[in-house]
Image 1 (cartoon, helix red, strand yellow):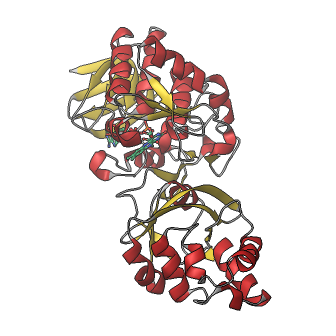
Image 2 (image 1 turned 180 degrees about the vertical axis):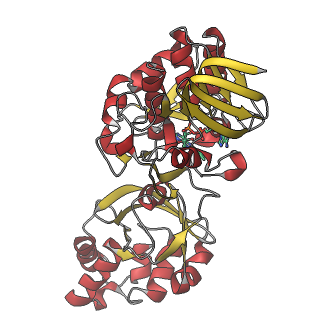
Length: 393
Ligand code: FAD
């Protein structure tokens, strides 16, 4: 038996559910299918279980894409405040953590429940454990063969997300659909992901696993100031996750270990004020002690500061302000929060998210080559792109 609908959404994640709600509210008959046993798994896992559901400071500059203009239209028409309005209407308490990041006070489950309730009110039907076998396209729309039977729809919305965290249901299926219909898929790679170290850096820093400190991480002209965490395999924490999206193997990556301070000036001051103290001792007052010690064993002169002449001092300042971290790679999709690259936006309308190749085919959310920074931007893109597509399908 054929299930007829106006709109079939593949993927019951953030973007798919927002598309469905928006289209359903317009009176469209919407079906949502997902191969996972539960909807919104990434929403549930996000923000340490509290879902950083948006960022009040969202601008197009917070996204990476081969076409940085693409995200502007959808973001402009669905702002963080539109989503906040829905959150408040559902009585969900939230707070700002830092830098405009909004989190639920209680649980990310509330966001999933809100989306499900909105779907119900809009008459949207959701089916889990439903896998797509084949998609055909003709003049009368799309025929989607699935494990739950044949769906016949006028509009097909691909909301299958990226490759990050396969154990949460991520697949490259959206890219396959894109290719089937002649779309380009730009190379994908893990983003917002811990970095691994190799060689001497791995050997010298692995023992410091658990040490955290504020740094400014920079690579390829981009810099982020936030915390870094040393791990058994490498480095993590928000500063590293942010810079990981801008770094690729072989690229230089440097850390300012005294962010906001002039390291040379500080060293000169220490030389004046505490000439007899060992460098590791004075450094131990501004850096985690174990890190200060390790730096002085391998990268910095292990002597009283009065023995540092001006060239020594400048060399030491260089190590502290631009520590060259030798990263070998990333932890990969297993732990990455997002996938960079994806469906080429040049072949998709920025206002309707409709394919320029196949009328009625839409791509929303992370499957597209639009990737936000860490901090709620990725959900805001999912909501905004879903809202834009839902308004026209
Ligand atoms: P998804 O939410 O991934 O949804 C895709 C859906 O498609 C899934 O339900 C999946 O099961 C389904 N699907 C996949 N393949 C198929 C298939 N073959 N057939 C049928 N269905 C399929 N972003 C933030 O803004 N704030 C955060 O706090 C945050 N925390 C995160 C924490 C973690 C651990 C991770 C992994 C990501 C986090 N992100 C966060 C990123 C954010 O979750 C994603 O960018 C966002 O979920 C993308 O929305 P989407 O709807 O495009 O894809």
